Length: 172
Ligand SMILES: [Zn+2]
Image (cartoon, rainbow, N blue to C red; front, top):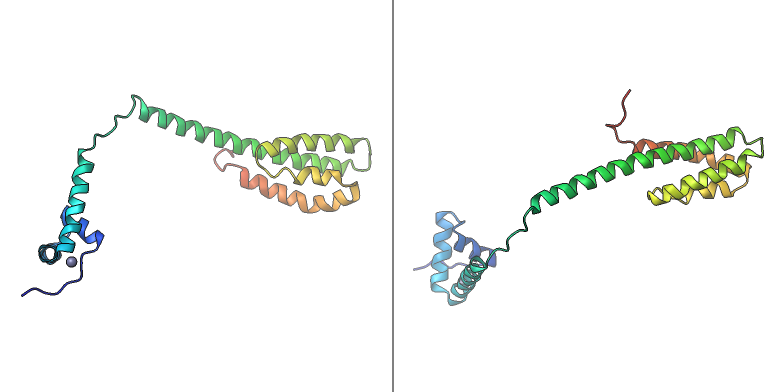
């Protein structure tokens, strides 16, 4: 007399094979598999697969593989850290140029100068994926509009700077 039991799932078949069940479950699954050709075949197919996988030769890792991976990770970390510092400097520079343009706005000669500076900074910011559209767009506008925009842009740039600044590089 056997307890009726649902067919084994793939997971149950694998667990049975790997001995991952507790005794009660294992016995119930094993009994079912012994009496059900369908499930017996399922378990057998996993056994064959497992045997074939075990027989496969593991490829040898090239010499120095671990060291190379660790080195690459370290380099990437350093590059990211450098990028963050540069982005912070560029943000600060752009904010400074903007401020300069505002302060010296009355003197027309300074405006193109600051605008060119900001454009160069913006190009750099673009390379650093900072959102290059912002700064040149501001300086393409005439000064009164730029003043209004700057009122919004300055806090934004400062917030950006604060976001970009690595907390550990700040020391006072
Ligand atoms: Zn079955």
